[in-house]
Image 1: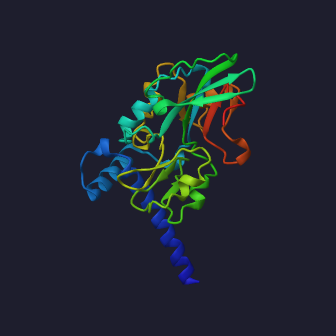
Image 2: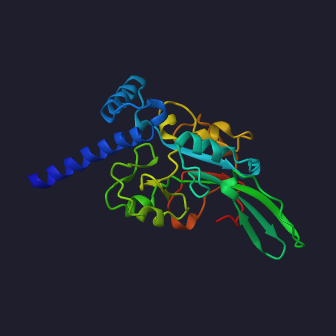
Image 3: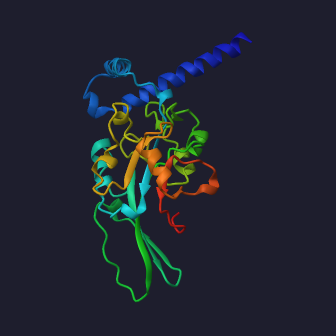
Amino acid sequence: MENNISQTDKKVERRSFLKKLAILALAPIAFGFLGSTDKLKTIKKWMLENGYVPNNHKWGMGIDINKCIGCGRCAVACKNENNVPQEPFFFRTWVERYRIYEDGDIQVDSPNGSIDGFENWRTNKKMLRSFFVPKICNHCENPPCVQVCPVGATFKGEDGVVLVDSDYCVGCRYCIQACPYGARFLHPETHTAEKCTFCYHRIVQDKLPACVEVCPTQARVFGELNKKASPLVRFLRMNKIGVLKPSLNTEPKVYYANLDMEVK
C-alpha cells in the first residue's frame, strides 16, 4: 500500500516538473541563453510574480474561413517566433487552399505552407467555390497523441494546452502517427516531436500567439473558453461553428466559422 502511494506521489511530482520544463523549452526568446537551472528559477519567479495559474485558464482558438486570404503571414510569423526549420515541410501552422468543382472534384494545395503564395490553376472545369483553411494543432480535449506517448513527453496542461517536453521525448514518432490532423513533425536537428503550442511562452505573459497577432484580416481569434468576456466566447456565440473530424470525438479546441463540409 505504501509503495503504491509512493509511486503515485512520484508521478504527480514528475508531471508538475514536466510542465515547468516544457515552458522552459518553449521560451528561448523570452529568456535568452540562460542555463536550464537559471531558466527554471526565472520562469517560476515570473509565474509567481504575475499570478499565472494554469487552473484559472482554458485556452482555445477560433478561425473564420471567410476572412482568411491565404497571405501566409501566420506561417512566416510562426516559423520566426518558434524557431521552426525553414524547410518547406516543417510547420506548426499552415494554410490550405480548397477548390471545389462542379463535377465534384476537390483540389487542395498549400505551397510551402502558403508562404510562397498560391498560383492560379488553369482548367476548363467550372469551379463552384474556392477558400483558404488555416490548419494548426487542435489542442484536443481527448488528444490521441497523449494516449500513445510511451514516456509521457506529450501531455495536456491544466489550461488545456497540449505540450511536448523535448527533454523526455525519445523521437519514437508514435504521437506523429496518432495525430489525425497531421499537425506534428519530427525536428530534423533535435529528433524530437514538435507542434503548435499556441505560443505558450507568449500566452503565459498575456500576449497573443504570433499567428494571431500578425493576421491582417483578424481571421484568427484567441482567448479563453471559461470567461464570458473573452473574444473567443463571443466568436463562438456569433458564428456557426464547426471542428475538424468531429466523428473522432477528440473534442478540438480550435473552432472554425463557416467551415465547408469538404474540409478534411
